[in-house]
Image (cartoon, rainbow, N blue to C red):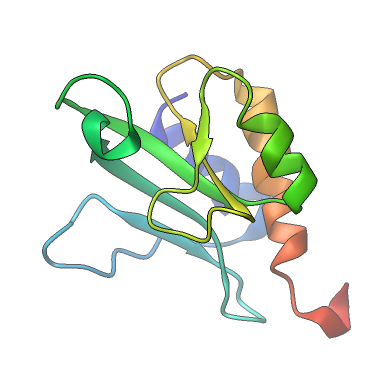
Length: 122
């Protein structure tokens, strides 16, 4: 999975454009609901050692929100890590290095979108 495929998916399915919020991190992109204004995804290139992995080279990750039990189960598999820079109970980081299949990533982004929707619209 590369970030452009993910950006195109979010644009097509949810009509959301990535937001680049930080001058210091120009490659970090946030996906935000148009109704609740909550984030449902964050793409970032993070040094592997910041994720608890070996090496200092950067790797793209997608942070998504999950239900607690789902997050716990996913973190037992390759390609899934505790949510980098997020609440580690409900957020996971997914490596975008080909370890996780595109369809699985799309499904998890969809789940995150639902979990972060305006509660009145759920």
